[in-house]
Length: 193
DNA sequence: TGTGCGATTACG
DNA sequence: GTAATCGCACAC
Image (cartoon, rainbow, N blue to C red; front, side):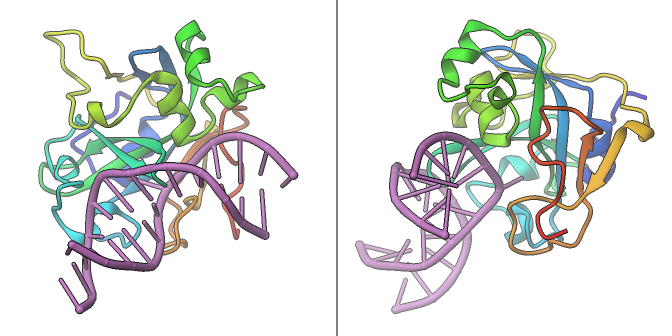
């Protein structure tokens, strides 16, 4: 089943596992995701529309990129009906062919998994940053710097459901999903589980 | 205009 | 365990 980005983030997030994210430096298969939505205290959209979250409240299929801790970028796929403030955070990808550009962008990666096994790492490796905030991931007319290749969702038996990582509120909801046993997953266990 | 902090990473 | 580093959200 091909993911339907107009659905809610909690439904779309696990469905995006296996889809391919293409960036300026290379491509990666999505292996770990998290869902965020407007009625969710951990979500940037919780406070409503702000300069930062404008894209999150826009139409589905666009890229929401934000800077975290003053130095790392995180990539999200906006989903749900326009105006609903929902997104899927891409937490890890498995490279689809490692390029020189990806390796150059991740000089600290000593092991191959360190190239893309985290939300900030994958953005650096693929070359995604704030300049790409708001781009249409499904644009077909023109080669976009960042795009999403929707692929059939993973079999439910291959998907592990867990709690989200790195948040200080709404830590109880199981809105993180990853491919079972995939070595590029950032953490196999939710903190505090 | 000022200020505290975060959907992280890397190193000890 | 904790430093790095800055745009943003919200309080004055």
